[in-house]
Image (cartoon, rainbow over all chains, first blue to last red; front, side):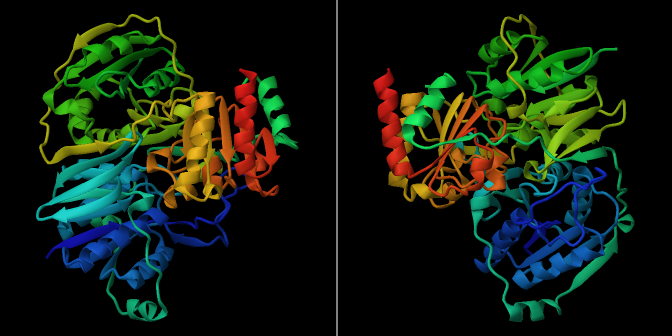
Length: 249
Length: 317
């Protein structure tokens, strides 16, 4: 079966202004709205569109994390994923560990594509997709803004510093999504009801034979240095004078 | 004990990208650093010369291969991973080049990566931004663990020239796959400075209201010798190309002068500019968050401000 695997991460919602805990042990997440990482939502949307074009038959969504992550998997099922896999763990999962877990899932599911967000908006690491591609020994097309499947190949346009780069990759391959790849659909109420009946497999991280190694110790979290608010000027002449004073014009 | 650091050069086949010299500055902050730059190219002679001239670099390795005509992570990573055997650190810039490549190297080495290093506290302790820069985390790796990292280019000045490192050829034995092929690159051709490294940047947001209006910024940018950037809102609306986006998911920049026109200042945008020396903001809305971090703010209509400012600049020359 032509299958697409999409991995999602539960993160602090995009609209929440994140604050550091006073004891520097982390950021405040108690009582904070949690959502699917926005880039992962784009990944899922792309998988669903590929399926709707008839180029794939099944979309499987997976996540790694504590029991609460089921909310996000249910949302993903409501968006249209066919089934979900929850790799349950309370451990800290570093990107390389996540990639090793996803490799296990890839070996089980044999997808034609694994689609991930280009980064999670919590740790901003931007590593997991590339690491999965390396471990799997398959192509990677990161920061994708356009994806076209053609038989056993994909043509992917990537947003890079120099402009838009197009790569051709053999399938199976790993894609990571950039912002402008698509606009994810809204979930409708009937879909939420339907999603409750869709299969959601739960398995322990240990059962996959992957250890949650914590190789990077996070010692402390601090708020960033604040820039001082400067002066307001009242007109363009004053703006020009201020620039001139700083030697900038 | 020397700390051996391998830096993967970013280049376009002819010219070494400034991001590489910024990685060198970061690497030099590691005690007893011995720095090697690896140049993966079809013919790396010119780029290797430039890398050898970066101050603080001890060695330059040329890895010439027909497969390196375009910087494909799947071709560079296997060779880089072989080379990395003798090094404690493998660095690349946190540009799209390094972000794409470095995790692939880290996974092949089965070693962790730290992304966007912004400061060093010791040879094993680093600071990096998370949550779009809303928090800074201090991370430590166990002594003796090989570290792969991307270096946040906005946090480090480029190392100076004047060096004279020895250049040698290397032929790391690794099989290069054929599963990934370069097709094309479409880049907006212009004579303006590169946004990532420009010392001056003029940037526009949603308030420009059209691609046509956005061109107003180019006139001012040309008078200032500036690059042109854009907010995510302006790019999403189609006023500007995606490679002009500044912010958490676009380019993180640190110019001498950043001028924001009609940009309200979402946190995701501010994280891309907060290392700028001087931030100027022009916005109709005097309450816009961008004014909280601007050094010089003007509440006004950009469609009047830009032409008038251009006139004043022209008159002063």
